[in-house]
Image (cartoon, rainbow, N blue to C red; front, side):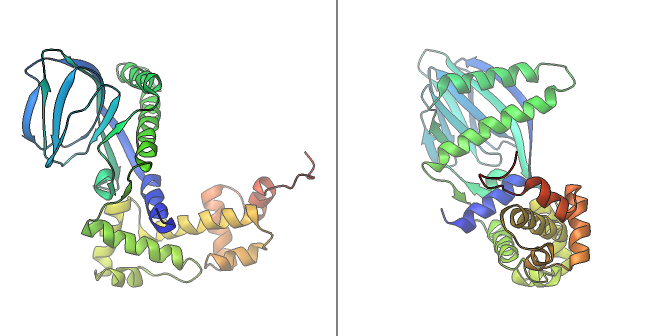
Length: 282
């Protein structure tokens, strides 16, 4: 995977919002069957026993115990049980959106992987189910944490096989814009020039961008500039003025935006987070 694709994916994941809507363990009987369903939520199935079949679009899977499936929302789905034994699986339904767009419309990844740490994943699903049924105040936060761990593990497993940006027109357009921003952070970037890249009217482009990423073009550009500035302040000896120029901002405006986002001035950030050599005092 090239660095540009990796950066695009990181941008999507950085802006992803996830919510669990159901989580259970089920051992299904012969009536577990659906044909040409069009789900409106994503599903994770962790197979623990028995046999079944799943058709996602035009591909047929016969998942085995120890395999984890990711079934994205909006993909035509059919499934059923095989044999006389129950088909046992941990499962959850969840949303994963970047702005208003399903994350799995933007990424292309395998829909079935072999699990390396079966006991570890089983514990994660047990925790997820327990938290889903827990009325405590902090349970929603812990649910998100467990789901993020499961999905992160899935993506790390998918990296060994195939994980890439989805070849869809809307994703291609936003990728063009994000790549342009990365390559021109040192320059003045306007909404109008970004809109021209994808042949949109600026007003429509602003709506489109916020739908895809969940924030405005200017907010995204400033976030990327501040990320770059933090990297330069902590890992280089450039002056604050040099860093401001490197990210395409006037010094006064740069200092104001930086403090608003981090709570620290650029100089304070450098003192607190600069990488120290082996001889630095503790």
